[in-house]
Image 1 (cartoon, rainbow, N blue to C red):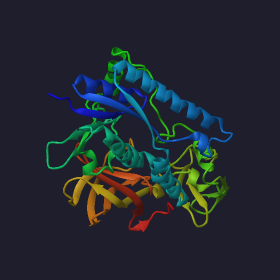
Image 2: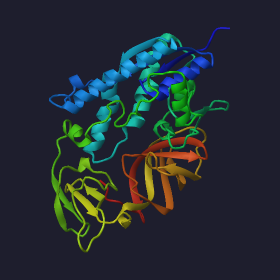
Image 3: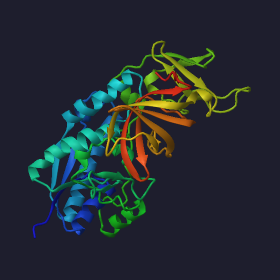
Length: 376
């Protein structure tokens, strides 16, 4: 019997390396693709910027590690450039959102537009039966539509980042490590002698990697300084550009406590029109909380119903109980009378029914007692 063919995205990290090994172990005909999506040498962050040069070197190191793994496993490795796709479909959106004083999540767009769209289109030349990725997620393909399930390792679960994928994008996908925890993945990699077995997990912006974020962003969006105030109007100092701060942020504000105000300061609001950053010395300041959020551009898998479920308003956040009310085919009003801290416009809200991630959308506005929180 002819083996089923799988094309896997091999990133040069331990997760995709073990995913490729497990596919071979399960009897698939496997070929791998390394995706190159950012070219520091031709983008403005590279010019005179040693951290950008380091990032470019790191990308080449990832490719060399992917080659070592492919050679060890005896599979072909193809290299493809999605630099233009990444700029047009992901990074341009990322910049536009920051211009609007919102906090985007590029990793969600990366999965939608690159890993599960541009990659899939490229892979068609190989006529695969499946594509595969080293994500911590699981799929149930037994029903009328694909169900995206949380990974066994809840600490590594990546369904939040995959939450905007449409049913069509999940129909011929495999997530070989979704049933494993990270320790087991590392153990398998060491046991099989894979070059990536002890490699540090990648962090930072999707495909761009670790950077000094404010310096990186300033290459594309010049910062406009403005006033940092308390909600009562008291001026504290100057901020260095609203785009460099997120709701609930504590680090990097450059303000210490005082005798009558003990504790760290937190960003509680931003006003784009007056270019004002609002801060308060209270982690649990009431202005950080909302009880409703308008969620737009919703992608949903399965039947659309109003009612109770859980949601994550940012990655690694615990599940919150919410009440969903559909306003139209792609818009939801999420209510949570218990109140939730730092629900931030631009971020993704992922919806869950038990272990199933049923969809997600983008936070448009947050409200408290029917009044918009001044987050933008």
